[in-house]
Amino acid sequence: MALFPLQAVFDGDFVVLLVPVDDEDSMSVVADKVAHHVVDHRVARQDRPLRVRHDGNPLPEDATVVTAGVGPLDVVEVGYA
Image (cartoon, rainbow, N blue to C red; front, side, top):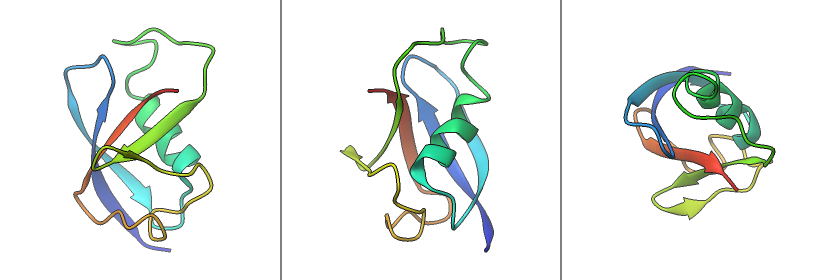
């Protein structure tokens, strides 16, 4: 378990976030960590699941940061499916 930072952009937001995640976090946990800083602040909550994309490709919800190939300071995009 190693903590490292990701850059994150949430669909519809204008802020690039620096979010600490654990290398064993699933993509659903990463999405929640990013959404915590955005949803109900600058972007309205929606009744749809959150999804993480890396290099424009959607990542499986159960993939971990390591198995998805996401590295420290990589940019991920989070948004509603």
